Image 1 (cartoon, rainbow, N blue to C red):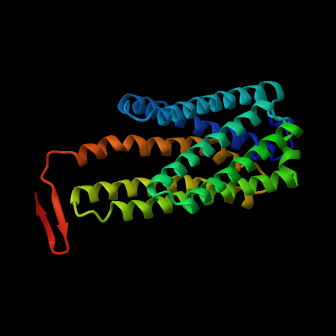
Image 2: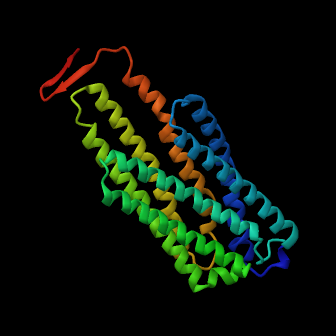
Image 3: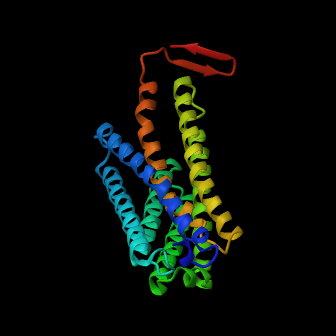
Length: 279
């Protein structure tokens, strides 16, 4: 079957797509487990928060179904030719939608955490909408031409793709930096040792999940710019939305363990410049 394709074609397009889906499907399994844990453990969360998580799970499920269906159609019907099934572009749109909703959720969190700071909140929202707009532009162009080679070589596709990735990376970095800053300033300097320890752990979680998505996006940019003649960037594209959703679930689900630590029966330690005392 390889003889049906030009030299290097299999490595340039079908291989990255299959690798990306192979990495993405196990992450969807993690998403199912984390979502189930969230809905079992946090029944008291506001209805709008639980609604957003439910919506994200439905979108992520639809994204997974569209990926599998598109690869089935692409392989069985087109034998991985350059004609892209429209449902693959739909899966692209769903991925960008997931990332957009997650970033907007962090913007809402920063709004309250920062004491309603308009600048940082609007900056995150602007970058998030930039990511969403650039991503939708790519999906629309892909549907319009339905040819991977034509789309990838299009100047409009390149501009939309770079704009989406740069906005997404900048948004993740701003969110991570702002959350660390406001958490340290609002709770990290507490005189109660236990509270300070909990805040420090939240900061570690924020840095960890923020770096995870940021590194993934940065690698995607590197693939996009460093290897313009192939589709290796699709490997990261197919997993980034699931990394983004799972990072949000990790932050939410970590609260149970942190609450147990905060409200444990151990003596409360009051920190001071000279040491600690127990109450």
